[in-house]
Image 1 (spheres, rainbow, N blue to C red):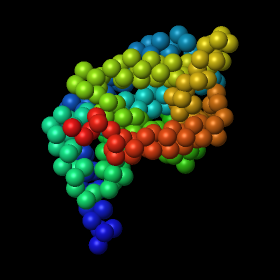
Image 2 (tube, rainbow, N blue to C red; image 1 turned 180 degrees about the vertical axis):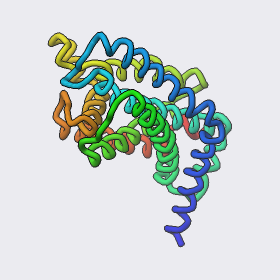
Image 3 (tube, one colour; image 1 turned 90 degrees about the vertical axis):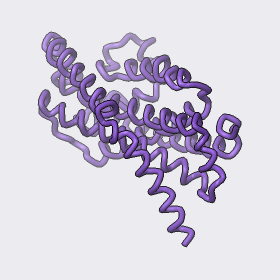
Length: 257
């Protein structure tokens, strides 16, 4: 009976989260797809023709995995940060905290909702990419594992942002000033081999760089980093962020008014 109670609570949170972004799909699913489509046209077709090859692949083929990963990262993060902050702002999160639902069920439900939106947009972008590049997934298991783990990482990160945010402006600071620069410096549009030694070192301390390259390895079979290091970094981030989120659900004054 207890297991059933937990499953019902988890299922309810996930369904609510999925309905939340799917009900306004014109605002949550279409704009990211249009934005990435512009990247395909401008960077892939127009600029890519002048660049030629990158890392042994046509430039369009090279950037597709990075653009897919970028869409997954941004949407996994934004769904959780906006959803949980809305619950906190409306004080409805207090009802969850006083209910007999365990904290890990609450957290997992919100993370699953973020993953659902991130992966949905990722699938849309992947489908769009087929009109621009001839993709053949070299390592399906690695591809799926990397995208799932990355979506979990940034869903958890969005949860932390929502906990510390005091107003709606605060939920846009991290995506604008931290997340976006890390993505653009994460090897989405270039190979690290083109960079001077200093910027190669800077890229090496950017966790998104490992995620993008591991995903590129799964699709193209080529990467600038050791894929095992990428999985290790993803596993460490998941463990640390998950533990931090659980601790904040129990103790943070940012949640309990």
